[in-house]
Length: 226
Image (cartoon, rainbow, N blue to C red; front, top):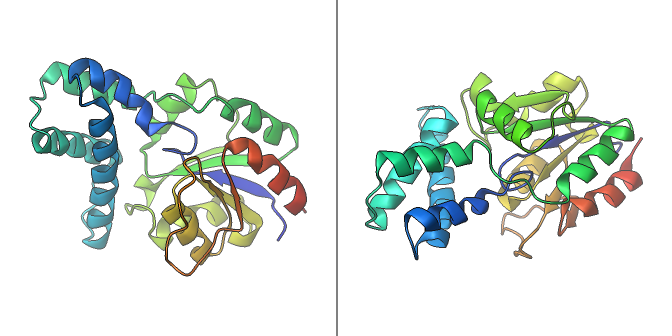
């Protein structure tokens, strides 16, 4: 393998989707963590259902639908104020602390960096700006252009298309094991940021590299550059 570019998943990899639990706790005392966990799970469930049934809907709207459902499931009264606040926070999620330095290091080493995400372009632009990552990515690739969420092959194909190199020469980085595994099936060189020390998915495929934080990515890249 010879890495020529890197495509990062956004949510859970660059931006902490569970950091929203603090704000959720203020609106729903005692339920902040549960809401954040269930919201994320339902959000991903809805992307899969919509892709399987060819019923695409922008990720922002899917995220909002998941929030509404989870509040009903937890029997929480979701006011318009709370909904707007939580959705607004989702647009500027907290980045993991090591990410900015790692991205700057990779960029200074001459690598082309991109984000390849289910998020809409405005969502990605907002998150990148809020995290101080402006100018680090050559492309913000949103599945809105193919109207299918990951793990559809059409979503992963955006990387080779924009960089003009085979998938094997692009390093795909995700903290979601299912995403890293499916990207491996697609043909990417892959790295799983296993922040929680989770077990490997039982899919018969293993990402090419694994680490606990994005910092561990640097050594993997140095070993596998062309």
